Image (cartoon, rainbow, N blue to C red; front, side, top):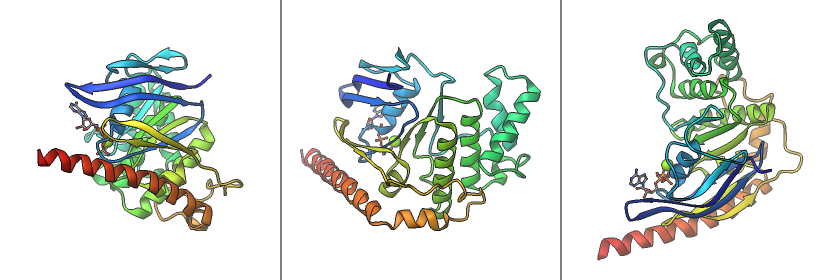
Length: 277
Ligand SMILES: Nc1ncnc2c1ncn2[C@@H]1O[C@H](COP(=O)(O)OP(=O)(O)OP(=O)(O)O)[C@@H](O)[C@H]1O
Ligand SMILES: [Mg+2]
């Protein structure tokens, strides 16, 4: 059985149709990346899956049951995560566990473990303003992983980071995904990021937002990235780089670029037409 199913999902805001006819199946443990022109409805799609809003028509099933609201089975990481500024890194991760009824002592142990998983050992007592953007994003990721959701929903979580930090976090995310087998839905504007991370890349059309094509990405004997990201945010090492500069990588990048390019051109044309009336 599919982990997540979108069945004829449509979402309108007033008379504007943001999403239409979304049919999508995501298997358990799958890493799906969604790309599409700005404003095509990616965040809307993720919000629906997160239970932060409801479809105008159609439905979304999680483990066969309709999504009716947010739940601890789904962890969400946004582009700019609102960490609690008055809490330390540890306190922020513990906060995510308070709702789950985990006893205080165990909360501390688990928060420590997850900060370690994202490479933040030694930074437990820092407050958000004492952390870099990349570190803050790691805290946000640790926070959403700590309560062990089956599904991780990520809306451009690395977009605001510099290239090296981003690549390092990509490696860490893949490592975490390989280790935990979570189902990941990851939104990005970055084609390279999509190819690097995804097992499948869904390309969306705009106005209304639909799934245009799903490109399966596979590198055969993909190098294990587990040894690469040590959490200090310093690049990806030769394996990551080797993959990124391989001919297969370039082929996928070009394929997705072409799909996306056509869509962006179409969206711009629509905008121009609207502006001239
Ligand atoms: N609450 C809302 N009310 C009205 N319109 C909305 C609302 N939320 C989103 N929209 C519109 O729906 C469309 C899709 O928005 P959405 O944020 O999902 O796009 P996106 O693909 O995530 O864009 P970006 O890549 O820029 O983040 C946009 O045209 C947006 O203006
Ligand atoms: Mg968005």
